[in-house]
Length: 322
Image 1 (cartoon, rainbow, N blue to C red):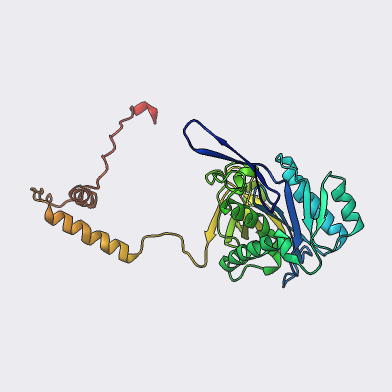
Image 2 (cartoon, rainbow, N blue to C red):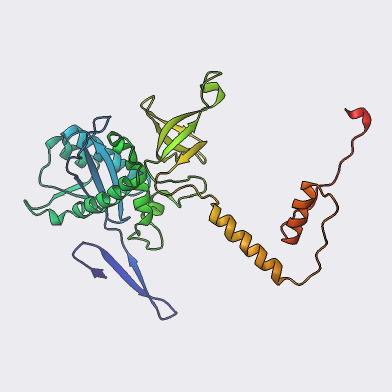
């Protein structure tokens, strides 16, 4: 049995192959703390971010809060704790700062969780402090990729995707072959749930039932995250309504990385490559017919470049079918 300062125990057993098998038992610990005030109050009144760190899964959860009041902290802690318990993870020890209200203490104790406070003026003992720095760096990087015209007052809507992408990159402590996200929620399917840079400007398509006859077929919006409960859909913030909307058809307008498209240089390079390949090929090429049509010329050039597609067969219909 191996023990360390983090109260994590491990047992070793020798197998027939001569290798040593190491099994890490769950520490069943969690930590929590909140960030400083965000420079801009969100449109929904949020000013802080509550950070919940689970030691075994190495996952970092985050919830926006409007203030540091007891009711806000209790609501955020309960939501994060329920997220873990719904996935079969139940921490038995929770570490937090020295400041703790009586109401929050009762809520934590009601979940059969032991409370441990860090020493006064010694925040290093709280692993949530390191988790706060990690989440802030990741969240700031996401804000840096957002469109310059993205409304900063909607920063709290970007938190769910930040939590998702951060935990995808973090290694699970119990099972290093899995990410923290995969350990909690299962393998993430990028095909079923596409992702994009947060704060990208989009035009969301409006279905005929949602618009009038002569209205535009799209509305301006901002991409804020995926729609996890919908297949190949995204969540957009629509400024005209001030609400989020799940859409399946959008047009992207990235400001930094443009949509891939063939430029004039690409066409020129391809034309030069085709000419060189044609000159290096020693074969007899048929001459053009007398007074050829444009279609014949294009097809013969495509055949010379070996890029022609088979000509579709001609279908003749009976006279009485029209």
